[in-house]
Picture 1 (cartoon, helix red, strand yellow):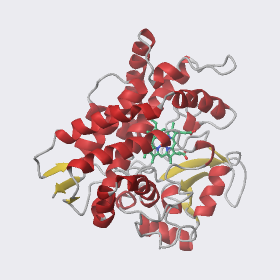
Picture 2 (picture 1 turned 135 degrees about the vertical axis):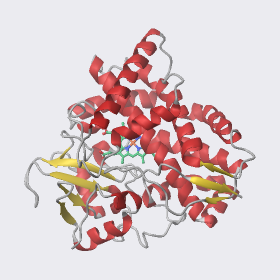
Picture 3 (picture 1 turned 60 degrees about the vertical axis):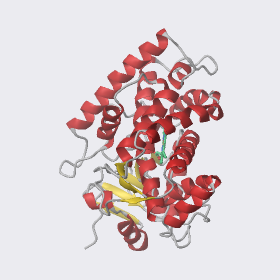
Picture 4 (picture 1 turned 180 degrees about the vertical axis):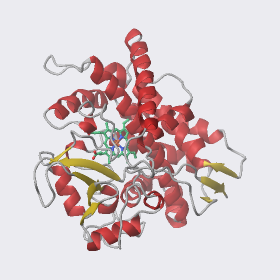
Length: 382
Ligand code: HEM
């Protein structure tokens, strides 16, 4: 009998054959193990993501959610509260001139690349994705210099799940508490010495006399660290993996870096780090009010009804409407920033390392009901 258990490690390592089975035979599937309905077809996922009145985020968007987060962050509120929060935070994102960041990002990437020049093999995930992501986030959000591996590890622990527990764990609580305390210290420091980073900006952002209150500033900072660190760190590794697995696409991007934006979009479709998010039904619709529903963005992106020959990684595809950054009112706030960081990171990496391949076929994966995240990606440089 077919079973889809979002806590099963097989879903972390290769969810795609299971998604196909879901789309073809059980497009609206009750997962007893996850206590959640799973929507896997593109049209159903987009419709649900667009209908926040029915598919609410108020009980959280992680399958194993922490009650202390719900109702307090962008991803765990509905309009109108969500729209107010989003407008205040977005204000800071748009005021910042992302175009002016390219040179800083390039320097961060060059330093990371230099650190493993002369080596034949290294862990791209730890030494490049983590370093690049955490240094970039520090610069943009306004974090002080810190132990990057430790901070990314804490962000991972916030979204990592346990197949034996199936729900939130004490480890989640501890990691969130740690990042919250870290956020409080950063906010104090920024208030004492404001700069032009995001925290300095959104803690004073004002629309019609309305501002974020103290708790909202703390929760928003925590959320940006977790959302940014895990989604982007993992995605950078997944994209390197896609290119390593498709040498002709890699050669194309090396010869013509203008193809990198196409590689980013196709990678977001083919293999996004943000695979599945939760909503809760506010009324009966085939499923019952109060039931949890999983929007499987990663499956919708491989739906043959939307993307012909979906298991082919194809830089010419230009996949309009992919759900790598989600859809609807909760679509990723950091998408523009992520695209910019990824483009600069791969441009610089490819200048020094134009050919690489995976050292291992089977990768170790973080156990997570929401994210796809390799914990190691050894690359052999050729
Ligand atoms: C390639 C990297 C990234 C991917 C694949 C990604 C993916 C996503 C997805 C799928 C969602 C929708 C969640 C839902 O439906 O409930 C989302 C939301 C969000 N992302 Fe990202 N993200 C990335 C990078 C970032 C970065 C760098 C930041 C900021 C530093 C960020 C901040 C956010 C925020 C704040 C939300 C919540 C938006 C809302 O609920 O209104 N993300 N992201």
